[in-house]
Amino acid sequence: MSGSDERKLYERLKREAEASGYLLNPDTDFVLDLMEGLIANDRRYGYMSCPCRLAAGVRERDRDMICPCDYRDPDLADFGACYCALYVSEEVAAGKRELASVPERRPRGGSAKHEEEHREELVGFTRSGIPVWRCVVCGYLCARPEPPLKCPICKVDRDRFERFA
Image (cartoon, rainbow, N blue to C red; front, side, top):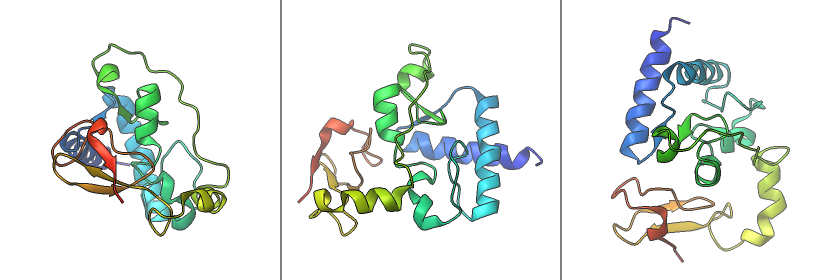
């Protein structure tokens, strides 16, 4: 790869992350290596699956690990970084918290198996069983397992979200 593709993707993801209240890992060389993996997976599968996980190559089975993956926010909240360390918390970015190993949250067999196993306990949220969250400040709605760390519209923290029914 030329390196310019990785740099362009890095700049795009950094812009998008910051606009939504997220931060990329400040180690640019490390992040550019991740960009190479994301680009390779996009060319291979047609989507940017997490370069630190083994993709099935079937979008339906891999959709939970398409970057940014479904596990990013809980990993950031619990460990200060996502599984591949592309996204980091403010504390990690500022050097106030060390990066540590992040355990794998993804269920064995991927998202399709996870949804099937938990369908009964999630009935009543969305058709796919995911709860809907509402920002009480601006009204932004999102369907995901947990509310985002920050509202992508008004930038308030996750504690300003409520379950929407």
